[in-house]
Length: 109
Length: 268
Image (spheres, each protein chain N blue to C red):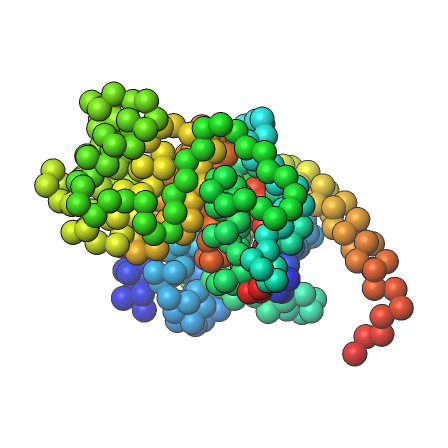
């Protein structure tokens, strides 16, 4: 497996989790992802993912003016988004526990 | 920057979005690039590619609620294939039901085409079991057409093999061709067709008898971009109609929408 499909699987989960904390716009989300050490995600991947969440009704956009420059598209999580987040968070937990168990005793480089 | 946004918009239209929707998405994309204060080409990559990402994101949700998976149309259990001492396939398992798409991926020479031929019953596996539904359509990577015959003669010939009367075979063939944005010329023989057109002919022939299981081997090789998109729309239309589809591909772009990915790995 290569890292790219991994990221594909986790990206929606990460985005929904960040939006649960507070509404945010694309660039802000990419910075939060990078700061969390998850990924330095290219715009060409991030913005279509946000569009996907919007189309699925998991997040709703709201244009807001910014102090510096053009207005920004802020996304807020919807109740349906919270449901999906809860389900995916449980999946993630199981997956992570499984991988952790497999990695027991492996020394990190 | 205006160039990039313009080419994004026209590519979105070319991929089938309504012009108003395309305009709207292009505007939004321009503003999103401004968020990070960078030129759009730097944030999103080439406009033509980004258009496809956006269309794929839209397609996820516009797909109707998925039907429940239907009966098993193809089942491989522990399938292996050896030629003399060389192992081409080892312990391959795959189950595909009606309403599902399976993609077979892997490097060149890893046995993808051999596997597809085993699925079709054209090659006998060295071990394991294969069960398939009776009505199978097979679209090989090349060949399968007769150089001296026109498209309509192919429809008649292949239709006859499936018990269709000539008129019905021809009208079905022409109809299926139109879904691939292709109008067969009345006098053009297969050997005069471009590679892409011959692949469309192959695809139509594989589908002519309304099979329950479609086996496709890289059928978009030689297709232009627009047709490539049409091809995947067609695959998902077959799936939504309850058919099982197996596609051998080396393009990983569309895998997020398929139900099973069988990775045969590096070359044998």
